[in-house]
Image (cartoon, rainbow, N blue to C red; front, side, top):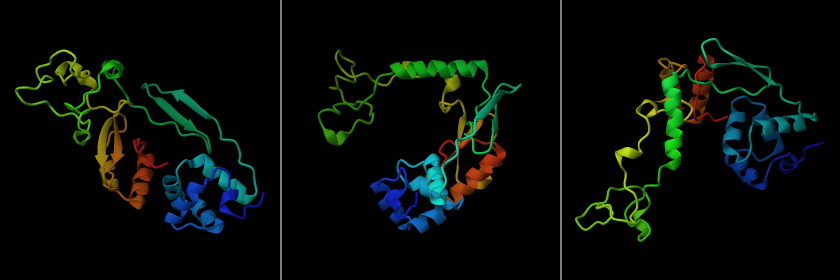
Length: 227
């Protein structure tokens, strides 16, 4: 199958064409150069909605006139220390790193998930009456506030009894302790067994790619990885 226009590519939608133009790609040849470049292909995946690594692999095969090969299987072995060891064949799916958790922390995370599921939605007083107030929680004030006095048929208020276990407090749902970083140097003091990093929102694409590559070398999990 010969690819003459961008619409001939499998999985590429009309909305993706305008998204490609925003990053300077308007022809098949320009897209081909981008997806075969290790740096620019991440930018393409990041900016195109509904497009992931598998779709890009099918584009590469289509542009080469080949059929995409199936992904290799992943073999997972249980480590002696507890977490799963990752053994990934070429082109296979990379298993996300797991934290080393104590039995107490693992139990606390399970309890927190149950408590979070039954915790009510705390909304601002009279959020339904005035749209300008919004739903974000604010403590009710005033001597005439019926919500503050906790009368019947009034919305629930934030109270200490709704909190989760203290052992799991502040942990990511995966069990990692989140650490916010903005550069490659921030990875040096990270313990990959119990900590994972989140890249700051103000970090640009070039520096983000460098952080992700260095994190892969150190075996550190990035919670908001681009690809």
